[in-house]
Image (cartoon, rainbow, N blue to C red; front, side, top):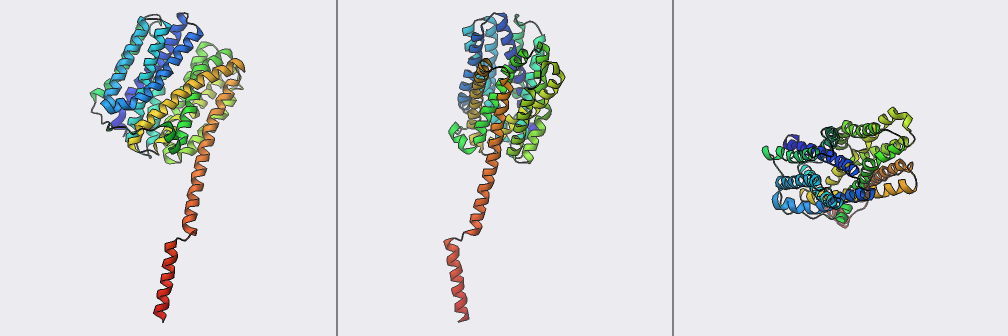
Length: 410
């Protein structure tokens, strides 16, 4: 399976580099241009509005032109969008352009996740989704180093983002890649998906809630803690590197054992690590590095395992619609995470940040254990009912057998 999807995985690595460089670049450029905090927040919200719209439209695009052509069209539109950022520096224009970027990247994620899940089985889905997430996180981490090329005020870095987006399509177009059939997708509403795999929708929402808060407001927390810019950058690198080191192993483990147990174990470990990090200060920087590495190792892989668990309960016709619903849950979780975490830090205090983050995986882990226990009890009840309760037909067969035995004796 990996041999057949490596062009997609390579393309997603480049997409990760694109998003990592683009998000940091625009934040720095907005600060240099003197944009107000409210304007920057509006621009950030524009990305996630587009993100939700892209998740809604992606299944129809896949049905109309297929996975590869839809991927290529979205990459071209995203490439144009980032260049216009450099040409026209204006808060209103950037808001619209960020909506366009959010639309494109959201639809690309739906295409990639539905493509992988359509070709995966329940025995290897966790491993493949982990590889996919590893490529994204690895790309985001590599993208940060591209900031050293040129200056955010120049056109060069914006051009570099455009080149990377265009390059992401090349592996898919020049290799004979088999894609899933793109017939009419079966619609999968969030309510329906909630009935089939409730851990999928709730888990994706809460984990993206946590991830958006960590990457968006985590640097603010550490800055107020008194850390220098380079130390904050190192902490973000530790978080991502921890996920890269353990993502594949945990995904493989979830293929061998009940996925819900692995999800629950990572979730409760994440809670403990978040509470531990909340007790550390700026004078314990090396302990912070190690703790943040361990936190990323158990926290970030939860998302891919939740997605894999959800697709275990779906047929291939449902996977595109389900990917769209999950990406919408991601976007909604990110918006809520940034807003609620920011408000808590403003009104309650900075120290509450990691306490709140710690509560989110606990909900996911508790739900995973409950679902496993509930399913087990249900199976036991069905089994005991089958053994203990005689049916009407079985009673009549027993009576008939006794009557025949009596006749033969007579």
